Length: 508
Image 1 (cartoon, rainbow, N blue to C red):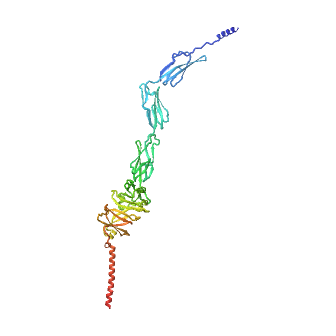
Image 2: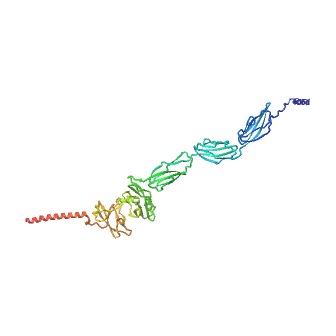
Image 3: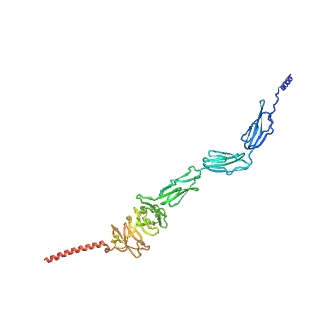
């Protein structure tokens, strides 16, 4: 019974089966090759309506009639679909799009373009290729845009410029720059005081947003006037100088004027420089620091260096070389030349000699100090011949010189002057007179020229006369007049007395 039922089911199912529908898509080829811009039809023998779709239209496109167009080099597929009695069928064909054959490349891989300018890209292109088919792009159009191979610089930055021709691609890294046009100091000139230190003025760059290197180099025209020390300007001497800045070939100049220091009285302050001292002698001078164009000067000493020098020298000598402008007219332009009291402090059992010389190293005077003093001493002096028309000459009555100091000595000390300063000879005697209210007072000093052609006197005042003979009473006009007056008075008195006696006798 069961066997009969199974047989009946099979028999009924056989008569109920739906016949199979064949795939209507019949392709003559399943793969195609073409070049960019070429076209090819998909070959088929289908009787049904077919639908064509490119899986990558950027490489190859396809029309509704199955016409493939090469867009760019690469591989893709065309999907074909058909529908019969609500049944869908599909197939695919492979498409290979070949790029152009030849060479396409930029001549430069990197380029710097100045903002607001343009650049026509240079490239090599095979004759078989069409330049009009090149596609141009910029990775950042806000920095630079590219049109038909011409790049326009818009703002500072970098972008990648690309040219595409089929599967040929050329690239260039392009940087938009703003080159430096000029640089200047702000301000362009300045004034300094001697020994001042100033920061170098700031620089102004044109254009302000330049992309050029700002690595600067500074130099000076005269380092004895203005020098660069640790990146700062230092006023080394009085005068004019220039400071230069350079950035590549671009340069600028800063004009600097260095003025002298001034004292409260308006005198120019000038400071002596030391050589440190050697073999018991320290040399002081002004070097090239000053112009000496002022009317009055205050001379300062390097006190700390002198004290250090005195520590290691029992018998010390300081030699000061002065320029002619300070020595002329009896040092008339020197307002102050004071040796500070601190220099005298070490002179307990010590001798300090101060020699003043001119620029030719000719000795003018030598001071010898051997005691402590709490007062400054002005080294300013003058030694001049006494003119015959002067009243003092009439009192002295012979050739003589006047030696004057700026202030009274703190104590009695010795000075030396060269014999040539008063046109003397080795055998000549010299007499020193202290001038009190313009009248000579003998100091009882009679000296000759020593073996060093120097004449030595002991000084305790500020005004002296040096003569070549003692001032005799007969040579003193005032004394002579006084004596004559006395004689005349005595004579007249005696005459009157004698006349009275004679008259009285006669009366008797």
